[in-house]
Length: 185
Image (cartoon, rainbow, N blue to C red):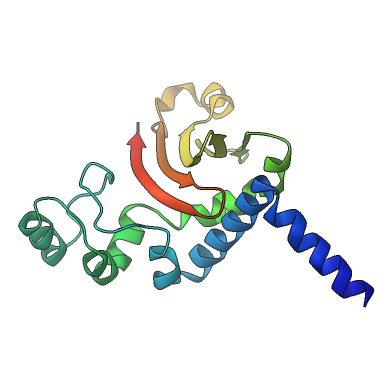
């Protein structure tokens, strides 16, 4: 019976703690990405998507034709039918590295958690971060040239261009939902 009381208390604490709900939501999103669960991943999107909310083009001939017919809007069926192409094109697999690299539980006490991953003798390093700004949750992953590598190899020039994929979600204190995808670099 103590276990039931603890479970009820934990459930009550999660429900009354928006940050705990956010962390749980990010855990569910991470799990969906890791399993490449199309239906679960698409549940984080509200369709139709406007062409200004996404930064991916030339997905495949059918998708591109339908996008043009829908005046730039992206429907659920379009996204679902071209999911594998979109997943690859937007490097959604990098979400796996993001969630493995940063400890989402750090959001309990911070609004931003981030980590750079440097590998010895590699020209590139990876950047991963999660930022909470008001009701927005920003997931970011990217690369840049490693300064230490460049010092050791000055003749190589830029090895790895600066790049970041930025996914912005809205958090309504219950669920995260996609707002915008941007690319920098």
